[in-house]
Image (tube, rainbow, N blue to C red; front, side, top):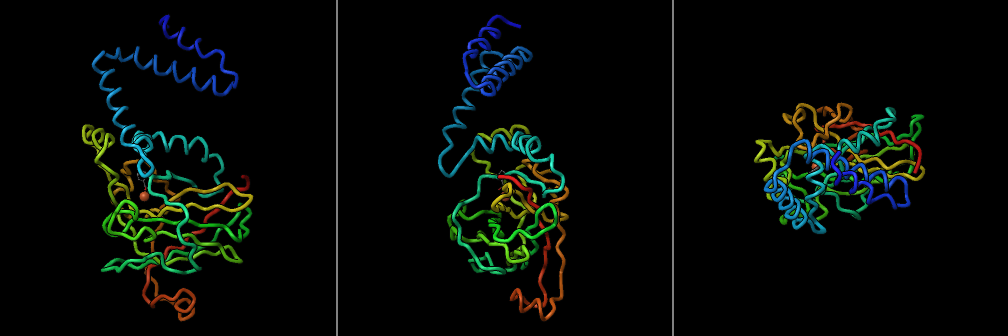
Length: 285
Ligand code: BEZ
Ligand code: FE
């Protein structure tokens, strides 16, 4: 090891909290090892500093280019895997993404999240239950959902959409049921106008994510679940730009002839497309 590496690691010896001390010292060691191994040149160091500086300059309340960088490097999903994959009974989690907006309208069971005129989009009913690991209903869970419009953009990102379009929160019912009406999401490209865009273009990587609906489910006494449902047969399921796809989150959708009972219960026409998916939460805080 170089003298400067040893000195730099030792300079953090006084940190009182053992975990913080370990995190910082290992980080310093990893960076030094990398620089040493690749024999980083002065101009490569300058390029790296410039890239990180410009990444930081792009960040503000509505934009987090560093999270996007973490996503396209696979780091976000590695953190997810380390922290959330041990319990195989619960529904798998996946990347949060930058497009969540808090405090969206609380909607009623089977309401639609579509607030704009739709053209030829495929209508969708998403329903299922929120359960615990014993298969029992979780009543009163909050289910926040968000998805893209047919132009591949989220409200908040697209100035032409109402902020509440294709978003909403639902509360699970007495048997844990949730249901909402929507349109089929489309595959879309992650933001490409920043430093992450530069990196992906330089690397000849694409920007596409397979079509999905985002869910954040919170319930008292249970661990929050941040996940998506991906739509079967999407051409980007095997090439997600942020590595977020997990097999158990891929759903088919069925064209149904709704029974008279279902037509009344969900206020849908006889012909609608159905995603039926139960989410399983694990106990904890
Ligand atoms: C998303 O699914 O909204 C997303 C996730 C990671 C990066 C960009 C977008
Ligand atoms: Fe998304």
